[in-house]
Image 1 (tube, rainbow, N blue to C red):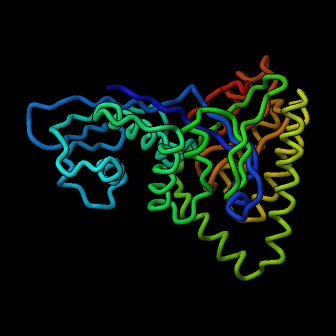
Image 2 (image 1 turned 180 degrees about the horizontal axis):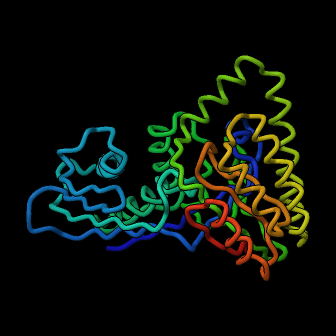
Length: 307
């Protein structure tokens, strides 16, 4: 049995979403995880994931192992105490720790492939709930946005604790994603922002409120078919993320390079401190923006159309 899951990118609202403000995120089909589950001739559950240099039997992994814990969660949820011999292959084109939802995508694809192979297919809601529980193990207090976008494979407007809303795209628009090549753990940046918020709650609540307003404006612009208005909103959002201390010289450099190359706006995306930035570009100039990002030090770029 094979299953796949896309990457995701946050357009607006990262970090503030943890504090119950809205966020917008979209799937990125240009990168994906694929999982294949096969019956095995040898005893045990054998996992092969070249992306993380993993070639091991499940029982040899620690209980909190990122991939092992997903498999154990599936067995537990399905009430399988003695799993059959399995061979699991995991391949991915999603960079790890780059804000594209690599971990959640692996979890979604792995859960779906295992559940169907074991004749216990799960609904999207069940998959989403399971992946969110797994995300908590690795990210402390995750927003829930990675698992939501990737599970449902749709653009979403998301407020923690409220029902998921998909949103319509009035007119397609182009995003250029630039990867700094620097791995950054979301758990650390989320924890640092929480420490700042605990010291000066009023100040940081004000920043979260400003980000929330930007998100609402962005959704309105997207739904009304005015994506050009997203450029200035990206620029404003990036300044606020700098105030949250989650940008970095590398991210700031790529944001500036994109703007100088003709992007309509640019900002970091995701946890920050590394990972990705995004730029809004006219379709005709997306390639030149991507080239400028590579020239400015981006490890890789992805051009994706939203809608």
